[in-house]
Length: 289
Image (cartoon, rainbow, N blue to C red; front, top):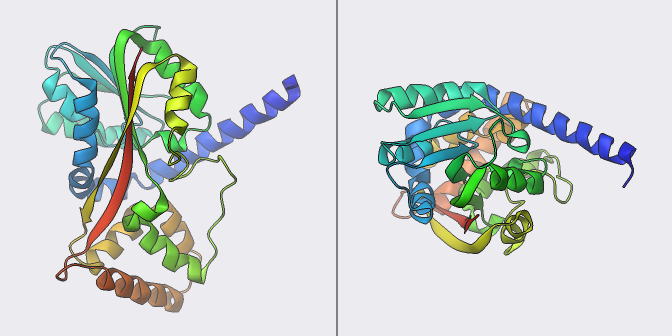
């Protein structure tokens, strides 16, 4: 591969990172509004990550793609004599995380805006690393795994989560499938950052093995998201899903109303006893340095 090709790839990845930063900062208000709901939804995933990390009270933990704070905040409550550093591209997300830490009285939690491909930490700094639902969006996943390995202490543990296949995540695809009937959403190139990029079995363990991690394993985790009803589902998706927000912004009110009616019909048809309990599926990947 020529230096010119490498340079072009670097520019493309930098553009992706900048776009992601802008997107996540833009939707941070919606995420703050729905923070309690999202944290309840994601609690089993955070608990699985924490279980695999075997958090000790004096651990030095790095939480990558921290968003509004979890699972880093829960980890900080366990590692009372240690500390947790949350990193994310989006400063507005981290602002919410800091406020959440203050509300919980956590003194051992701090944040730093950072790119996972260039972590601003010395080698062998942390005893544990977590990353909940961030890996799918990293421009270069191998570089990200390499950086995680670099800053982790020998013997340290990492645990991350990624979304499973589309057919296991009806909570997400229900809305997207309806929107796609009215406007064709951009199709991502193979391997491009996206929701289901990491769903292939063995993909993530291969990436982490290439970085040098050992004792690697995968754990499938499935469950139900309680959206309560179709109205709550619609409000949530139109507040926090950037792809949905961007698509609806291009449509007139009549089309939006038609989409809304279709979404309500789909959610109601898939509700249990009039409760919108929708499937989700994730994979936990864990290992040691």
